[in-house]
Length: 343
Image (tube, rainbow, N blue to C red):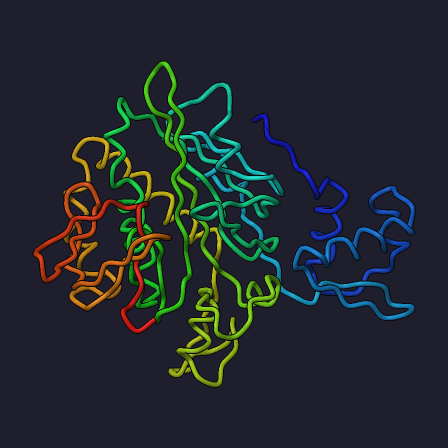
């Protein structure tokens, strides 16, 4: 693929992987392992700290990673021999969405995964904060014959992500159109980019799911920002325990990022195939059942407009149905943002 790492390189990722055992390694031993100057090791570690990674250093003992890092096991058969998609793995890339969007040889159902994105994108041009190894960040490329066929695609994907995570009992809800929340805090974002080709429309769906507890600290997310991760939700719902600890029933729990990704990818690809044949209709019931603020008074806002009404779900193309004193108003996704009335 044409997109190349911008900040990290093989030396950076090798340092991370060696220190991921959370034991001390001297700069001399690291330099010998990587065949570089020991002074470069110190420089690289200081640079990596700017991207959310935390290192401990003790004079005479060297460096170690303070936070647990879990990278994708891309050598399992699911990724080495994918059945119905082409898979590309990056330690670091600028943007997996851009990586697929501008790839010259587009193939149906291409998947690009990265442990870290230097220019990860959120909705409306906002930045999506990343910390190496602490999230699932990936994109899927798929062809459609016509631009009208993708209406509601991101909503169908949101439902698929919810279905794939049901076994974790995170109490997930979807905030229109496609942000996923756990206990009122955002845990996953979905973004769709498109480009027109001679064959039709190439749609790229980007998904970013927060996994690790220390993602919040790495992104310097302060209290009051409604953002969470899977580990944080489990920590809060199991009082007195720590991530990778025990729950209230004394049962051990841990988060296997590879298994979560396999479930999500399987469900999302199945959803894309259904959506391409049947549109959004097979997903509406699940969406409305899990809709954040469903049947509640909300407001839709844009830079110039504010609408207040009761959230009555979505229609067949993903527009929200807002019950107002003038009747039902249908608002297409992307035009306005939904907020609870009291915000």
